[in-house]
Image (cartoon, rainbow, N blue to C red; front, side):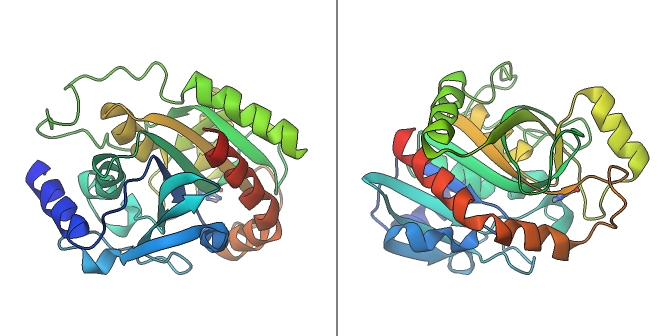
Length: 270
Ligand code: HPA
């Protein structure tokens, strides 16, 4: 796997000389965010040999290199998900690659279902911690010693310093910000009401199909991690609505402007 990573790194470095400081992963509905970025270079995932390519509608697949305010960033416009059939080690390959490209900090974003009954569709939730019990660890398999230790500490996956930065950014932008624990399930089916009740007793506030595995891989290699969920729907059993990807996209689109503003503030301040 490390060899695969270095091959990917070489194939990016042949075309791109940009040195990012911050990595950003854009979730559902946030793809348009790159319009806010002073783009220097882009690279389609398909151009990178051996790279996993997303199959989800609405997920473009490319790296965008450029500046948010004055901060050099690499952005994943489109991610791959475990439910697409890639092994976890492949799902987190792009995250690791962004670390190997030089990013020291990473902002993860996603669309998520609200598990905390006080949440509403359209809310933003800063991720304070996560639960990956329902998915395999992306670190299973031989450890990549070049990246990090066999048994990495996960007691502070989401940097406390970055959490403070995010709180300040939201306050300054007049953007209401919830906080909570994100639980990742595999998808692609939405959860059952019983699974959501289970997640609630576990201590989860939001549920999704991405992000936590990327956070684990990023933390393993020593990146400072932070994350924001856009609550696009109430999770199964918490409302009378049936869950659909259309609802997820509708809500994400509705609040995209303030989500983008929040992301810009965070990247500029982290
Ligand atoms: N469950 C899982 N993933 C999601 C949801 C959900 O309710 N909403 C958006 N992504």
